[in-house]
Length: 150
Image 1 (tube, one colour):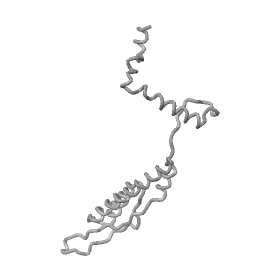
Image 2 (tube, rainbow, N blue to C red):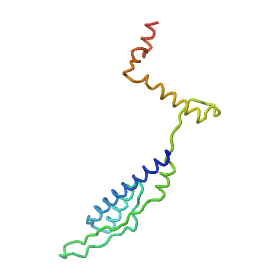
Image 3 (cartoon, rainbow, N blue to C red):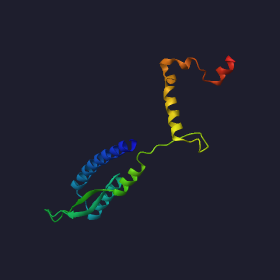
Image 4 (spheres, rainbow, N blue to C red):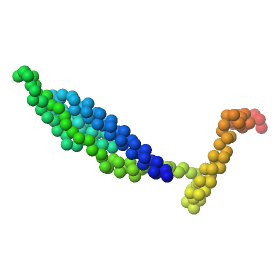
């Protein structure tokens, strides 16, 4: 159940990041670059910022609408966005995991059913932390007040 929820979250995140990547590529493709190498370097730099996607078929095209001989030709970037299968697989492999921290050293005592029982007991006693229950006025916090009371 936890894994399915995590997979849905990842799928939504991939879709959202794909829209953002397409928007950033669109903005970059509207820019005019001085040379072909600048356009390709900008595309590679943009592609490295994506989490689940990568730019493919990167190339720069020359703008042919040069009006004056003194004008230098500009270059426009063209690329396509694809899903990075390795990044997605790595994220899916890590999804649904949680860390179990305990002070139990014996592996025989580390039983998942006992852990779940401990969780329900802790939930049952969580009312003690509620400030409206006034437990802070009953329990002594500092060692100095404990010594003075003794």
